[in-house]
Length: 447
Image (tube, rainbow, N blue to C red; front, top):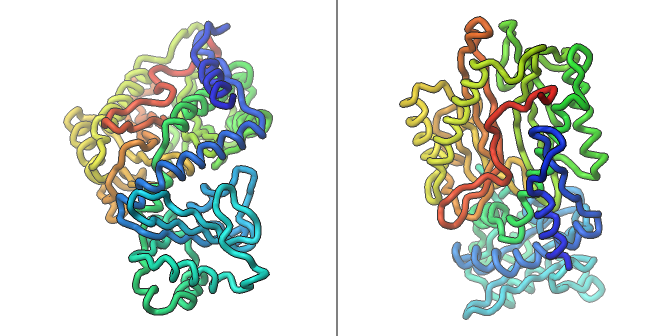
């Protein structure tokens, strides 16, 4: 029943005859209990499919995760039941591969039942949780014990120093020699998407696009009256009205023909600036829904009286932006490092004489997700460590970048055209956007 409901919701997200040009239909949003059912179902599938493949790929026999209440390991957060907001007390999860194609053991040392994990600790019989962990390890005698410790990737660095020291003390020197810091296992778990997730991720992108389209419309913006902050607060309230969450607060910026300073960091005119005809608007927006995140930027143009489209110079700038996008997507291939993708894409845009900047990143359970860096807005040089991580297939990406171009209609002023859209890198190396990429300006008001 749940699967059919999600399928119907996906169908509802398909374009329908809009009441006005460029208006998107808002997909149905699941009630909270149905969301929990979906998330728990996906978690069960991920533990059955993704986890064994990763442990065997990386030759890890045992994986131990430890989290304290309100100080959760980012990986463990994605393994808890959907109705849990935090780990309870101290929660320890143990995965063990017995070999010979047998199922992975999934054990929980916790005072409360943890989803489908097998209870492995009775505090009444053994009050010392660490001693019970040592007993479990000794009984299975694993050759390797992976821990979430990483210098370069915070999402794979969830084990606290206190918990690490407690593990070492409890298991003794022989087993302590078998402890390995294994960031690839943690990152692989976080970054890998399953088909069931990817059947629904386009709905999440469509919801994001529909909210942006509504916010950048005459329903919300009255030129000469509405400020950029008014629109920001509309977005924030709209997210709450829809019973959604966000992992960052939206921002709205203005570029206009006044030579005002604009940078990625300062984002042009902001705050109480009144939106006027002739302005180019930019939004950075994302939602959290069903345990997945979006991170999207869109551009709008506020029509002057008599105009039916943005000036040619602005449209040419968006065209340059999309050439940077095409170069980035063409370079995004499994097996390449983020630094290699950056170098390949930059050679292409430089050959086309485009002034562009690339700073794309993975997305999924986290907005700035697990995986490699592909440039940074403040630097286009290779990033040691984070940029050297290899790209895996079946991963989701935020294609984030910009192009700068002189706009004749604005007195030759240099204008920055920002882009960010979410997509999926499939097992065959092909890439597709979840719900399309921006090709034209959103126009305010709609013509």
